[in-house]
Image 1 (cartoon, rainbow, N blue to C red):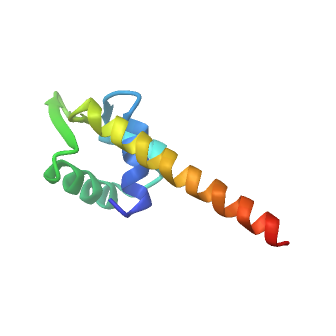
Image 2 (image 1 turned 90 degrees about the vertical axis):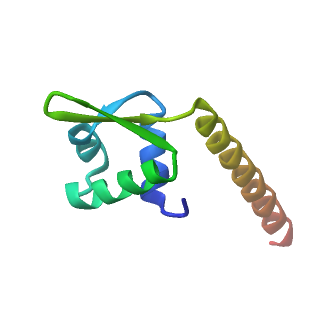
Amino acid sequence: MSNPKRIRLLRILESGEKTVAELEKLTGLPQGNLSQHLALLRQLGLLKSRRGGLNVYYSISDPRIVEACDLVRRCISERLGRSQAMLAQVR
């Protein structure tokens, strides 16, 4: 999960299911690279996929994943805020 591209994919999928083509357009990632990231996220159980005609649709497998990402984002933001405040005091 340390890869920013995977985190970005999760953020995009928070709004709902997307096709691989939509994800390719939204991320700018080449399809091969995108497919590798999607496969890993699916193996980890963070995403689920379904086939619909010629398209494969991806979505977040459990809404708690979005909550967990939000919690981590808030924690990092708070830590950065404290670090910036400490740096401002030193200057």
